[in-house]
Image (cartoon, rainbow, N blue to C red; front, top):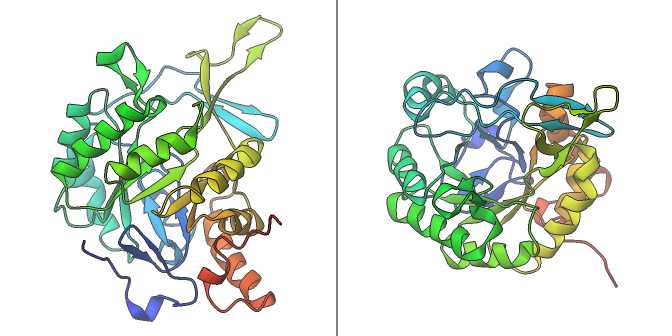
Length: 315
């Protein structure tokens, strides 16, 4: 498998991590759907300081997403029902990637489909495209051929998606796991067996909000995905479970607002983290988390990130 390296003059060996063959200068990535296509944040932070960028989820054709209202604040988090609005894979390649190529950060294209064939076609479209270093597969989407059941809720469906994608691309493939399942470890093992190079978890937890005065759901879609600090304990638990059960890298996602949150995920066994909802609150959050991890390592006399990853003490 091809390995992608960042220029040596901007990389620090102490914080480098390998995520399925892609070497990141540090373990901090941005979560899909929270960072646009990165250019939106270029005037607000130094993109080159990031370990990786995961762009907004891409479909074969442009999508307008769900009707508003589609975001609502909740205690310690937010619900979103954006509906995966995006420009489509062709417009991404033609209009968004040229900017991303000017930055020295690995780019993961997040992809989703409603059939296995759509996932495979997206993978083929992005294979060998300059500036795309890896794929992240969103398997929390409804499989229209199976009555709308999410691909990620069934180990067999999840593994079929991964195999179809791997057949169409030479890029490293990360699979984003849903927490809305009975056994996330079973799903993780199934996608590993199907050829996934890494897994990221967790995606949002399904929830809803009701206006007590109108007695109606606040979101037009009725339900949405809960993210933010409220889901961090669930995410930490699932990351710890999966990291102990698979041999591929695990990327932790869910409620990471500060550097200490990120450190907790690394201790639990994650090799990298994704910063999501925090980007809406403070656009420089990911940059500050990068610096905060380095400070933590210095203060605790940790010479390399590998000495921190999976260092949880449970005895």
